[in-house]
Length: 447
Image (cartoon, rainbow, N blue to C red; front, side, top):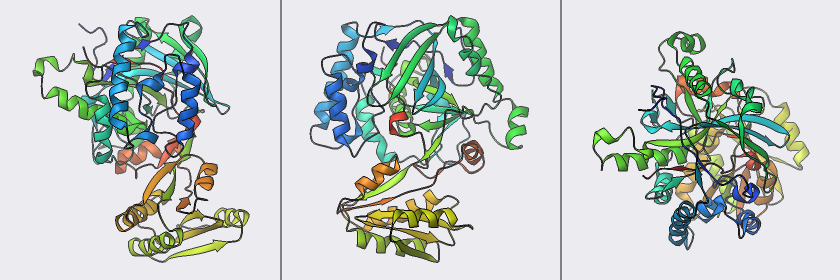
């Protein structure tokens, strides 16, 4: 019998990790959905990890997704997983959480690695489940990721899940005991990823306390005190990696269809490994996710977007500026309910100003116009970019146009999901690309 049985969707996992003497700097690489327009980043990561066991050999960077050789890469990934298991590169720990202390870009944040029950997750708008998406899920993005997870013996997450715990009752009490916990890894991370330390949380009383504190966050009275009456409890909100979690859900549904219902609860594919963080952690900052269009004539794209913004909203104009300083001053001084959307191409900079936006957030206004443009511009693509400097660099290409978006407030996340459902896709990011989760822990998903 599972000692840690609960009704809040938490599974106390048996994680897999390399031996403590492993070179964790080579082992750990950043989330596969970062640096998608910069394959040179992944080439450098490959040079650093060369010759050593590395999670780089167990993932498919999305810079290579849909590119020639994808199928061969996926088969190699699964072969590497089996080799790491058979050769003893990965060791199985007893059931427990992992407390993670991450320092990146001068900020420190805490997390707990655990597994979540995919039966408690629904990414559809209007979901009432304990685990929900925070942004629109693009179902077309699931199949290519599913090809990687299907028949894979292990999973390794870059998924960050948020809890709304202003009283700091779940993770922070565990951190106070860190000096008494076993250190599983303590390493710098490659390519400006900062530093990470992992502590093993396997003492039954500590584990029980975490589960009890999480359950208390779903207490009807406590939840209504935050959000008012009439709302189904939301415990876990996707921070990063929603499409990976949705892929795990799709994979589980496929497995579930092939086994008797009596075997569902114990099957490892029913759960997905994640890192849970408190949205109130001072080290968590919401960064905007910017956009860059590729494969377009920038002037034609500008004209089409302006037309789409007028059609979808009303009274949209485009303003040109002589310098970045002038544009920044305009954005800073602009007041009212309008959405100001800075854009860049070549040596030009400007801003769309939408005086009567149909969407609540600027990201929704811009994304709707971009989606409409993509339908009419064959060969055009959009990429989602972390960091202003990268946008400016990419938008200098002759076939590109970049856009900057404002950051969302952390305090807006849970209320928005509770009241309105998922946000527009790619609304926010938990930090810049180098601050994303680096792969570290693994878990078996096939017996």
